[in-house]
Image (cartoon, rainbow, N blue to C red; front, top):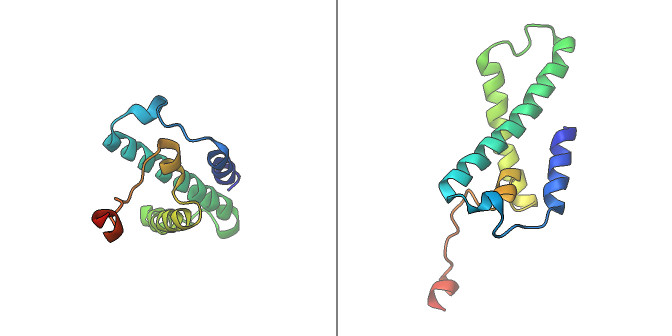
Length: 112
């Protein structure tokens, strides 16, 4: 949890880089890297909580693949929804200057 909070604060205080480093990569590659980054953040939080819960619930706690995959999927969906509604994007989106969603053109933008 501490790593997730520290990463969030770091991204919020980092100035946007328009033409620097990794932003020069093609968009599909940046999107993939952002998704991998977001999945790794969620995985570290979920696996950390599972590891902390094992002494309380026994060694059989979350010992099957679906015991880990289901909480990770739910947490990933919650993370993306909450991050997009509160901060405007996930950590991966902010670091790599992309958006997972395509922006739809509004009627006002089309008609001028």
